Length: 109
Image 1: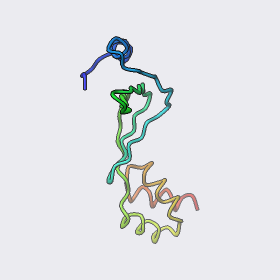
Image 2 (image 1 turned 90 degrees about the vertical axis):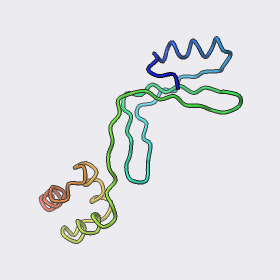
Image 3 (image 1 turned 90 degrees about the horizontal axis):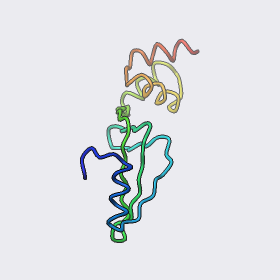
Image 4 (image 1 turned 60 degrees about the vertical axis):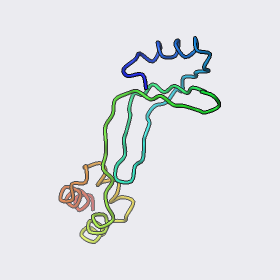
């Protein structure tokens, strides 16, 4: 909305415009999209009340993780005999590297 402005300066500017601003002490922000998650670590989150609407401003270090698709999950489950929940965790941790996930899950057995 305002480009790369220092969150503290933004907060001060909003107060001058008589917009109620509150800082939210967040540890991590995750935006879940259909095909990926956007992860914002070390976030600075500001909540502003603008004409009765809550507006969130989030800044921080951004990374993405691609969600494993159903076919890949089922394939790894069939190759390893491991349950869905554990397969999903391993695939997400290994950025959906199917071969590495199969090797890792078989190693754990």
